[in-house]
Length: 106
Image 1 (tube, rainbow, N blue to C red):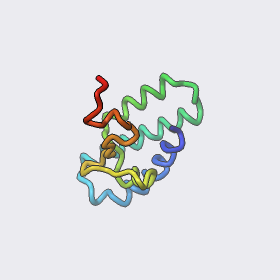
Image 2: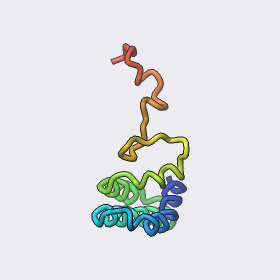
Image 3: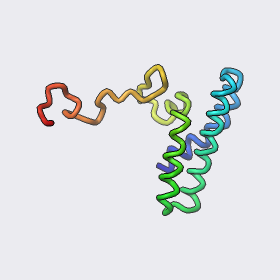
């Protein structure tokens, strides 16, 4: 998980600067706080990677701010399809027969 977190963290400041005029104040502030959490997560990975409890806490807390900007997600996973809200569209991807409506396992 370190590499994608680091990549997002490295890309976030440029994205914020380029998109500040396109975002309302609330969204800009929310993305700014999200960026701060990415910085904290990366810091723990780099300086105390065995502190799973702290990493879990930060991962849980960052969810309060929603998905990262869709442009940053697409940069990390160009083939990942996102819905209109920027949430990855899983449509059963990688779940095999578990998502098949005809599956009889309950």
